[in-house]
Length: 46
Image 1 (cartoon, one colour):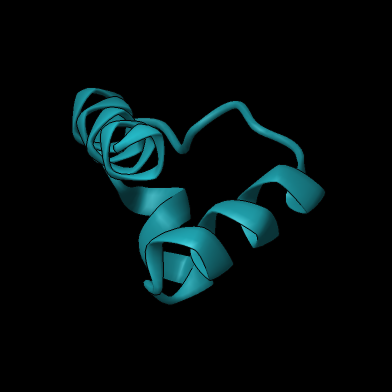
Image 2 (image 1 turned 180 degrees about the vertical axis):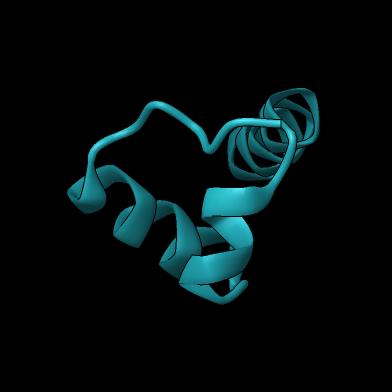
């Protein structure tokens, strides 16, 4: 599996928002990352 195609700045912001290490963000499967972002978005909208 290849690493996510995101910029370092984006990866840093995601790691801060999701409270996970930067290395874990870079190696996270894309569908799991999208799922976590959707959950985060849902929590913020409530």
